[in-house]
Length: 163
Image (cartoon, rainbow, N blue to C red):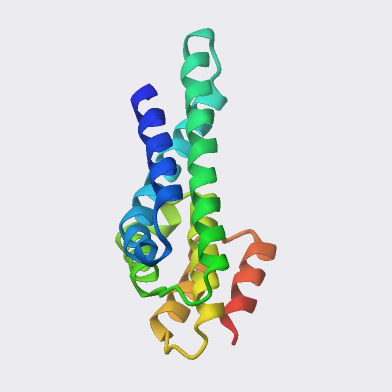
């Protein structure tokens, strides 16, 4: 886990150094991996938090550190996307849609789905002229599958889907 934290810190540095014109391709490859790591780590955190003991305190703290680094990377990527309105969204929206389609959305943690949705919503808001019916259908499915029992979140997703 320590090696994973170190690796994620290197990814953050490299992403920060990446030129804007290379960012869409980088994000296309990186975002699904980050979402997968975030989901896996958050699931492990939930398990460790539910049965705390002295032997897993170090592991729990490492997982919290990893969670913070992953969130920082995703926040940084979103900031860079929003700061560059001419950036192409096709590669990273396709990769996020593929990630969500290949995984059982109901099995992903809501936080992971929300993170993915923020990126997709940002892309659509920027490129409303694009024809994105598969995206709209996927967002509708996310609203129904991932947030059953959470009408506030489902309502927000459905509002965004109702263009």
